[in-house]
Length: 399
Image (cartoon, rainbow, N blue to C red; front, side, top):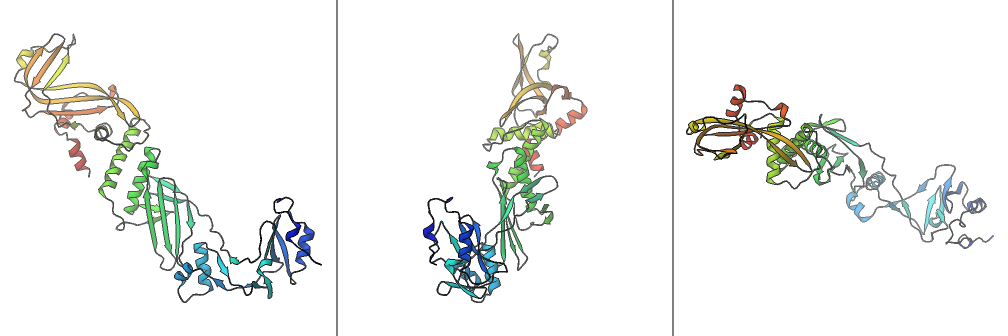
């Protein structure tokens, strides 16, 4: 019986090309005893057996794999490298044949497909796919990230490569099965963060990983001594931690921006130290004069006798602050102490008071988020005013 497998099918019609069971059975009768064809899909057959299929093979690694394997290697080495690199390896054939269950079989007969030609085909051994891996959890006790990871191909006999990210925090792990050493690489991209919380989580975990204060996958990982944090990392961390504290204190939700100018930076520091830490802040400025509007029940009496005297002034003002995409009204209590009055002018609607700019005066401020919390000056407050420090001094203390 003469049978042309290809000529009985239309390559342009996959539905029409579905293989009937009768043809599958007819093709199977031409195979050696114990072997038969089994459908992989509607138009493709693969060699199969009721028993295990034993193929006598010699594997032919490619040149790159041979560089890794060296001169002396065995089948286990090839299989290990094939799996770790996820590369298919060519199987040597003799005159286009391979031994299957002690039978010489044409390579062209191992797989039949209506859709593709198999004439002159090469035989390859394919590695099994990597198993899925659970997300990697990095935890410092306060902040935590769950990062999707996967094993990726690596052309190495002994080193397993795993990598993953959650869009802004990136990890790579190289595990050497021979030496049992772990190489752990971390990086981040703050521009991909959508919230201040994501930024501080990212930066704090990065720092604490470097300091050996984190668990990775439930196990303590000590990277201290192997990673050095530079000043940029530390300054960035300290700044965004303060922003996050302000965000929670004022019940706001900032949209992060990385176009931080000097004014925004200064506002963040002032509001953080004053509003969040309760500090009274000394300002490095000289005030030469103040203007006060006249109020009927609050007038300056005997102001002509004040010239040359050392006085203290306390007054509250409102300030509309803008941080990132949010605005908030804050109240600023001003402490102007030990000023020497040189002149007071009554213009009718207001008083204009001039000061001796050479005097050792103190100007400090304190932020409040509402008027009810404003604390009037008393002995304790005046001690804080006298002991107040500038932003620069506070930043140096906290380094």
